[in-house]
Figure 1: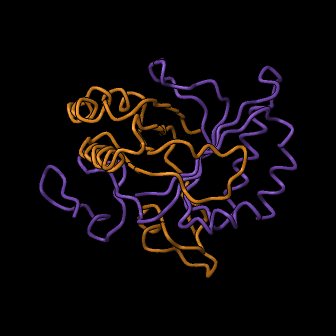
Figure 2 (figure 1 turned 90 degrees about the vertical axis):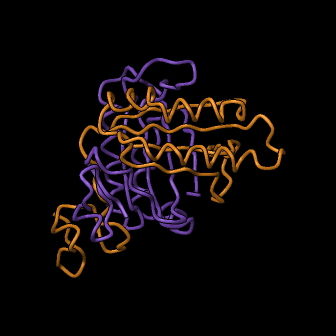
Figure 3 (figure 1 turned 135 degrees about the horizontal axis):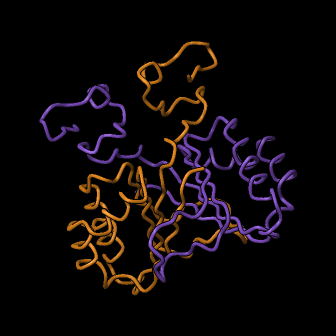
Length: 134
Length: 134
């Protein structure tokens, strides 16, 4: 149960839904056993006009794939430059799946295959991290 | 508006809340301008009993920091081994913040500083990716 500092439950929490955007609520706990698929892309031609936007638009088409529980498309954030922070990539894609099997189905989905066909020439390097929640 | 395959809106969608766990719903869109802070840890002594669990437990204490909207602690997922997948890390921490300023406040929070004091000897290497949603 999520109770905020005033001692009452929000509507979302009462319904068992995640509570977002309240500074008073504790961070929402993820569903047990979900997995995160985080991909970082380095463009082949970072200076070529429109390539970054084409990749971002392509990644957003993936939202149609039903196994994806959460999709975030990002670019490096203007956080403090520290030696441990890798901000050399150009675009990132973060997805949450309920299961490892759902992630495998996503890989084979026609919308994902079309994205790779359409945008695969844009990047020089990709690094993927797949993590399962513990 | 999120409409499932039967053509009706779920309760969460009707309330403007993210809909999770329904294979029929589209992936929930993140809040505009949020940022993701994703940290990968490589243990100093991966074979030493209990170090991984100590790090995981330490990371879970961070949930008390109010700026964190979402916290996931993970380990490499058993997805397909591909050359682009880096599964060499031991533990990962994924956080969502509403703003870059919130992430800076998190860095200075006493609970985060205590975590670094308590667990900082456990890891040999850390890589951080900070992404802002676009």
